[in-house]
Length: 393
Image 1 (cartoon, rainbow, N blue to C red):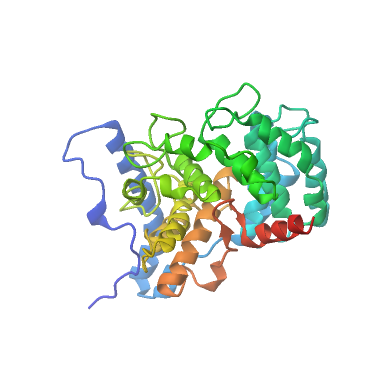
Image 2 (image 1 turned 135 degrees about the horizontal axis):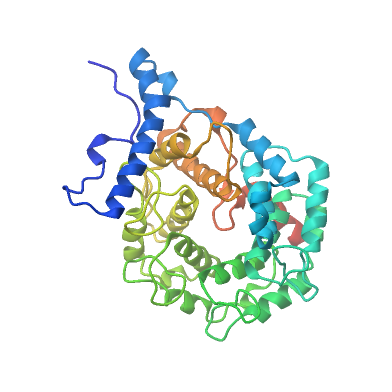
C-alpha cells in the first residue's frame, strides 16, 4: 500500500462545489483553493510523491527572515506605509508582538527608541494617539500599552501615566454601557475591548468603568451566534473575539448564548483550507487565525468552569497549522505587519492545541513559538512581567 501523506487540509473531497451555478463568491472560493493547492503541491505533495519521505512534508517557519523584516520595518517603513500615519503605534505593536512570539531579540537601541516614540504619542489629557500630536483614541491606546507591555522592561511600563490613562478611559465611557472610540467618536465592540483590556493589563480598577458594559455587549450578539460591532449587525470574527474577551475580563460570560456562539464559531473554520473565514460565506483570511482562533481557548476556559471541557478541543488545530505554513508564509519573509502579527498569534494558539492533542506540532520543535495570552494578544511572559510590575507598584 502506498504511503499516505499526513496532511488533513487540502483534501479534494472538500473543494468548492457550486453544482454548475456560477456566482462571484463561488468563483473567488475556487480561485483561493487553487492558489493554496498550488502551494501545497509544490512544497509538500510533489516532494512526498517523489520520495515517500514524510520528513520532506515537514514545514519550517522562516524565523530569521520574518525577524529581519520586522526589525527593518521598526527602523524604517517604505513610502507605501504613509497612509498609516494614524496607525504608527499599531505598527509598533504588530512588529514587537510578532518578534516576541518568534522569541527574537530586539536590540536595546530599538527598545529605547520605541519607548521614546510611544511616549510622544501620549495625549496630555490621557490616552494615546496613533502618532505624535494626534487625538487620543482607544484603539491606538490599546496598541501602545500592549506594545510597551511586550517590551518587557520596567522603563517601558514606567512610561505609562496611569492616572491620565484612567481619566481617559473613564471619559470614554458612554451611558449605554459602551465606549466612545475617541471624543465624539463611534461606539462599537472594539472600543469596549480596548478599554477593558488596557484597564486590566496595567492594574487599574476595572469596576469603575464596567457598569452596564456586559449588558451592552450581549445586545450585540446576533441571531447567527457571533457578535457584531454594534446591536443588530452581522456577526464578525474580530468583533466576536472582542466581545468574548471582554466578557471573560468582566467575568460575565454566562450572559452569552453559549450554544449559538459555539455553532457559529466552529463553522468558521474552512473544511478545505484549514484556516478561518471572518464571516459567513466569506473567504479564508490569515488574520482570522487569531481573531477566530483565540476565541477557542477563551471558550475552553469558560466550559471548564462548567465541567464541560472537550479533550480534543473545539477546532482542528493541525489544519490551522497547515494552512498557515503552506498558505500564509512568503518565501521572502513576512510582507505585512498586521497579518504577520495575527497569523503568528493564531499559530501560537494552534501549536498549544496540537501539543495537547497530538503531543507534537507541525514541523517539529524547531517551529515552536512563544505562548500568548489570548485575552490580550501578548505573550504570556510579557503579561506576567507587567502583572508583577504593576502589582509591586
